[in-house]
Length: 639
Image (tube, rainbow, N blue to C red; front, top):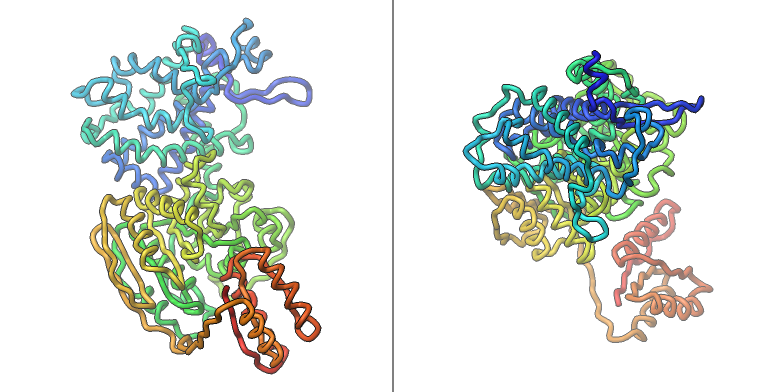
């Protein structure tokens, strides 16, 4: 024990906070590093799909993958061994080191961690701490490991920076000799803990390894952020400044606390139910399944990631069909959850309300299990929704059981409060519903984008109204599909009016992640397109008979004719929707028409896309039926 007190490693703090009595409470740096490694270790052990993605990407065995990633997660905060960081808390630095410092904190500790790894790499290579294949040289292995080192050291949502105000950093000025020795001693000790006798015959250098490690680094970057957030929570990991060996702390503190924390955080998936189909997932659905729903319930799906594009008319049950299809993916082990992306907050909220009763059917929950499936609503106003607030503990809720059967659960939505306190965590929930921006931020250079990628990689992405996005949003969606397929994800796209050119573009983007190209030819409608790395299928679907109708189209030459037609229809009690392309045109049309027909009929202006306006007005027309009003014409004029 005396040796531990004299070991410089134990003179560094990782977390600290002042107490009410003025004293300082702190958590030793080496313990915090092990806390985070333990969280990642438990996450990988409990998440078969995630660790399989790492295995598929690297070709390593499961045992070596788990050991190597646990080791690297423990390395994530080595930048805090720098005196520059330690002196941020002057009082604590003086207490632990017995001296003062004149060094300033001029670089983030995550970036310093990446630089510090480069400082200790020569020694790590010479003594082969990582049990690497010696047939390649240290520079080749450094290139292979660098993406993973950048991922774990850049654990605050941004890659490490290698410059200060545009000036390249001189590593020698950032660290004292003692800093490097402490970091080196720690890394060497944890390499023995995690990697001793763990050499893997598959861990051989080749030209493709650097590419594989780069691709999988996105997942590792998300994993280290998640592990660090959980491992930094004081409710689960109490501060400890008592000295004990790293192995002792790992076994007695880090692992037990990590098991509790991971279960409490709500990030683990419940067991997927094998009972699928419309009747099992939507027991309240009384109608005969629509042709599209019938097809996706029985069509062949492969054991590899795939893209489905469902094209059918409004009212054909595309949403339910997509959920059934996504659940079949989950039952095959291709995903552990679903995220449904929609164009607006209004449509996302409506979808959330529909999923409240259905999402529990996707999973098979065990009695008294802590692993309850979670449903989260992800958009900027989700906290205002009355149904969502109780699910995250924002107010006390009283739920009435909806089922009387012994094995049935209430359909009230559940969501871990830890998941819902930040929209960056939304994709970590088992089932998510939100606006399209929540997943598009995974491919934008935003903080913690890799956390979104991590959550997305284990979900079936369902994107509704894919025809409704402008060129910029569509470009981001295409990039997202490439990312998703490259990381082994599946997706389902829904549309009532998808041009063949856009369908081909979306399919090409998904196939880009596989490294293949395809050609779509079918123009029949309704249509189901399915694509995987080996095959493409375009299957026409029977149209709903009630959707067959004839629509009369009349072309008008100028706005004067349009106004005359509007007055004519209004005089006979009809309803007209005139969609203008600019706000000025809409205001001018409103002012002129309201003065003519405003006394007899209501006339109002709306803002939004033409499709949104038509759908809103069409819904308003149907309220006449509820009031038993006489039927009216349903006419839309587009200018």
